[in-house]
Image 1 (cartoon, rainbow, N blue to C red):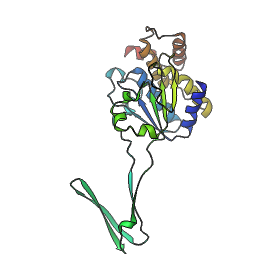
Image 2 (spheres, helix red, strand yellow; image 1 turned 90 degrees about the vertical axis):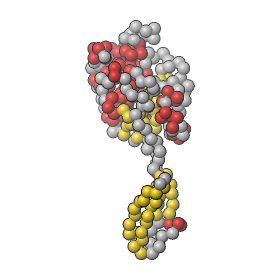
Image 3 (cartoon, rainbow, N blue to C red; image 1 turned 180 degrees about the horizontal axis):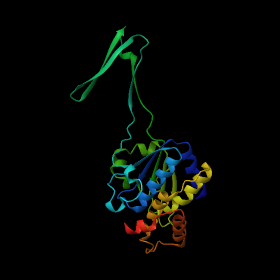
Image 4 (tube, rainbow, N blue to C red; image 1 turned 30 degrees about the vertical axis):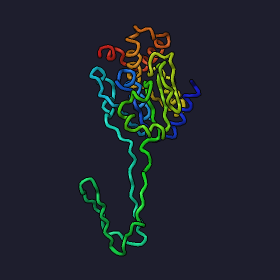
Length: 250
């Protein structure tokens, strides 16, 4: 697992725009994992987008920063039209809608533009890496995967999960079926980031998000997947300020 965490660390270090996608339907573990990573990456100066295909259940609205989660997603790259002005001088450009068409009207100040002066290409991808959390297979991302399948083959994909049914669909698969929750897996990863970047990342909100995942998936420590590791991780998070009673109340 340490080797896999190091691979994740290296990809995140060289990424500026990170897309985090929790599974649907959302629960405390998927939301806690996604939002904890959001807060960690923001502290590291990254641009982070969290997208989820389904609305957040009312029971989990109390979690920190749920407002950053978007239920709209488009991975389409910009389509760029390039005009070579070497042979003519540009005066104005404007657009005109004509039913299902857009006319781009270019007026020259001097000289004459021709079709040979126009070229087309796509802009860069909006994201450098995709991180899925608490997701056993990509179909759990719903319409976001169905509408953007190509994106998941183009970009590096990090799959972080704890389910035995996981498809290991990522370029990097950080899957630990012995963990009670995906948020439990994230604790050592966050500590790795702290050591690598030399800054404290864990705070009360991140600890609360991580503890919410463990409490949700263990049924408040009543389910059979509760282990000594679950209790140890939870004690560590409470030490960092996780608001246990707030989670239980909601």
